[in-house]
Image (cartoon, rainbow, N blue to C red; front, side, top):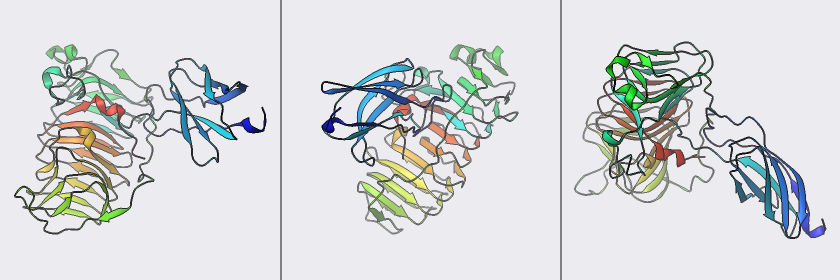
Length: 383
């Protein structure tokens, strides 16, 4: 090929997110038949049907640059890239899947003890939302509640109405109480279907890869946030405040009676200890702000809860880095996501949740429902 156009092809297989649970890639991609023609290299990619791949190049095997994305459906594909002017290494990998492809994904049990509904909508589609917000009149029936567990009674639907489908690992079962339903909108609206799952809305071959969460590699430099009395903002005093874009660290968070926290920036936060909100306390996320909340300790948000003024789940994410439990029972509607594959997650109360959950065991109680925002399918991974 000549000294100036030497080619090295190597294979790296990475799954940086929640891999498609109903079509988990099992075939490792392989690059073969490298051919130099003029100023182009041609490869043969042997992969898996309906899986998208990205071809990356490097001159030192440390820094990789995306070159070509391939979304063809067949297993064998031809990829053509411009020839490099010097020694170049190439690798191919599946494109990372989003973290939140489904309403609820667990590795253990899913216990729905409430009486609300789990459905879907799309905040980026006016036909399926109103002003980007959940509208029950425009809600869809594409919510999926699933677990990788293979144990009996892995999912208990209770008296909830799931507008969509349920999935378990092989051999697991789903229990539906007399008033519970799983299926399409038409199926759920028919009272005669209480205690039933609509045919075609249950699968027992659900598989998922739930990567352990970590801090982003580019986290920092870090600013420390401590408890104090910050200057009034809009006439309100706050115990904690994050007002500038960046990465932050806190030893712990405790918000009680009359205490408040404001986040008015695009920030990432690492909480080393516990997060507790109770009594009349609350956390306020300003309309144009966003937060990735990385927790090393227990998360217990009660009181007035977490007020997401912007109204979009993509702007508020709690990422549990350990096996400490995560719970939300605040008075404010929960608008956000939980990525906690090592933790048990509990939602309770009378306010609905908008977003998605990934966890070990999941429990929902009270009259609250959960509305999956399908726009989250384009979000993540955090690492």
